[in-house]
Length: 316
Length: 59
Image (tube, rainbow over all chains, first blue to last red; front, top):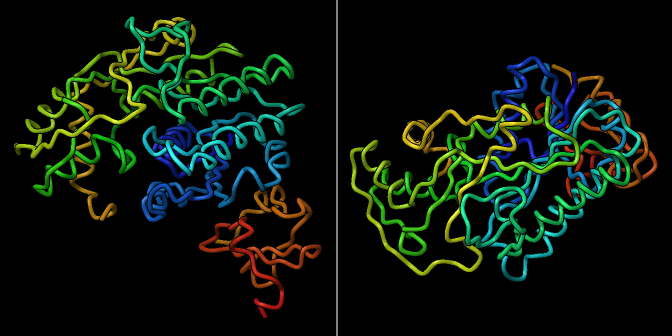
């Protein structure tokens, strides 16, 4: 079976590709190496994959490639390409977010019409919820994003749902809750905190660190993708959380314990668009396709720390 | 290792969406209509307009 992964050189895209290759699938991966972080990091993410004959890579942009021709030859889609990040979505570069997160998704969905696609798994985000009063957050919780990024991810989700209803494209959207682990994007909190601890540098923490997050280990997020592809219900959205709610300060203590070093923290004002708390109700994914996260925060951070400690040169 | 033939079949010119063909020396993919060559680097086709060169530039 041949599958298309967009954004294949990114943190989650490359991890999905690695898993699917291990499972025996053939992959066509697309990435345009958007400059949200250095190309060499993304190239490193797919370095091993490129050695595999079942992995075919195209450097290109889904907005300009003749994507219909590619979709003729695949059985499923994992749409991971997007401009990520809540904070950077404020300001003059918002057009890049709409271009890639909204237009890119629409182009891919439009090209998927009348193709024999078994499933179109669309990467969404917990940022579609915004600040929620009642936890845990279920898929029926109102979607009121508080960042421009969240608005674009919600638009992508809505497009996926529209193309399911209008053209029977079997879409599923997965709302990722703060995914972390080896190869995490360099602008994300755990990557920055671990790097600062290793190098003995000061690290800025947005807010007082008492904000809570449902952190999802990358292997669990990948497993959710594969299971949703195989058994998810068409036209549905699913939360992908890690199964526990942890304060950022607690996570920092864990990293300190793992590293044996004290973090040099500098607390600064929180950013617009950052939700105060997230905690996913993952019962829907569990019921429909057996999603059950396995890696707890301690084990997950240990794996990320060890990986980053061994691979820090890639990011410098 | 040459570029995968199955991959060649599904690629098209990003500008005109028309057919492309492999250069004899396998260093790029040619769109005769747009007179552009898309480079192949380390067996990876770079299907980006900003990376393409016109025929004149590649001679």
